[in-house]
Length: 231
Image (tube, rainbow, N blue to C red; front, top):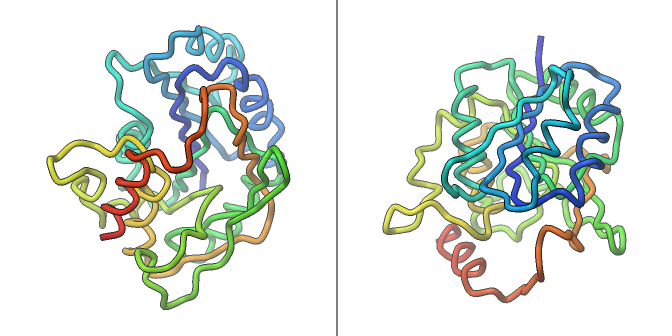
């Protein structure tokens, strides 16, 4: 039986946690598990997450003893499942949410195809409903093609076996901190035998997240990460 394991790195997400957890509990298909990793929050996120998920075995709340940032948190958890072909990994940021109660069912049905390694869905921005996710041409090199494989990013757990941790680090061996969407997913897309865009809106992306003080599109660290990953 296939199961979707959602991984949510969390940093000061109290403003959005109730929506995140409610969106998971509304899933019609019960074959899911959700691991939320608190990355040294200072706003009580860990305690809130524990309270909201009390007595619900679908959730596991973890707390870091040092700051690890989103990418390292996701990969560290995903490595725990990389030998299980029946697990589907899905990344759901703690300040976002699912917006389709059939998301788990959609993913499980897609991954009944034994050749499928990676799949992503459509999403909607909270401010204007924008969706930049779309299909990636079958033979396109994901490193050379414009970014179109945004949220919801998923992969068969065993796909990670083909990607060494060095792909997630800079030239000095430090885990990437910013631009983590592309740093995470491009290596997985590259090693995939089969990729698929699931044309369903499943993910609510909060560009106006209260967990982020401000968004600077040209922020140097983020752009430098993207350029390095693609090179």
